[in-house]
Length: 356
Image (cartoon, rainbow, N blue to C red; front, side, top):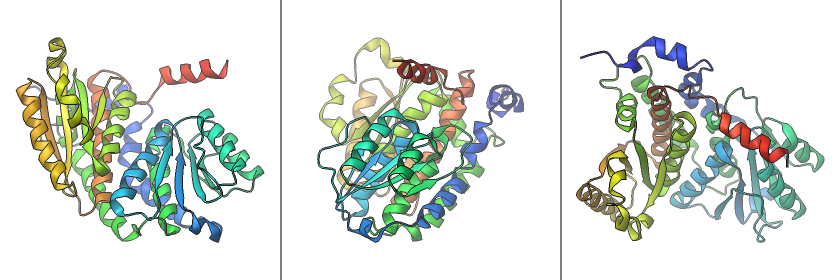
């Protein structure tokens, strides 16, 4: 058997000039740092009285809002969490709303638009950014800001765009205290880094093996509850790191429509590969739906598998699955023969919008 290309040091030197691998492998430490910084952020006492949380963010900076929203539901948060991925702020945002605006660059036009509206509505605002116009607006309006230095892709700064949100909400008592769960969650992530690192041969490397199964395929990622937004994160990482189409869906909602389309178009079936993320905290009825969904997919001729996500808590399961998905998308990009880091098409689109 010939050696795997993913086991050759040459491919990393040739296709990862920007060293995205280092940022993926360093995610556990980034999360630890972001969590500590957010818990140390001084916020007005009145923020504890917030009746709802709204997260503003797009792209890599927006993923954290979806993760927080799902975790808040399962963790029993005492306030609702909603996410705005766009220009328009919901009309219900008022002085009793905590608005967390996350933008890595600080110049995301959709987030800036919604943030201006939040300030005008008298909301309890917090900015999370490296700088840019968002930080300028925060300072002009005496809004607390969590600033951080980051040299890399916004999508690789997930610790800042997710852990900081969770830590702020926990510190204000709006989310149950997740501090005791964090050490074991980080331990699980660090273990996965050891098991899925580039120096670990493909045979026995979970991330490399899954990337190989997805090579040349249209991946479909399915999650539920806290892993619903994780499946979405996998999709966006395959888009950006793998430079490839991908689809994300969520149980139980997809059971009410998607099965009718499993078998068509028939020409597409050989290109599909479905990965269902299953975790121990999953609702019992949803776990049963995973079994039923697998039966229907296989009967329709779709290549599918269930990936069991370990961890002692939903936070640990969520972070472990994110770590794995980042590695999978990175290795998939290398198998596609592309450098995972650059996002030329996104930069072109930003320039296009800025010129109009």
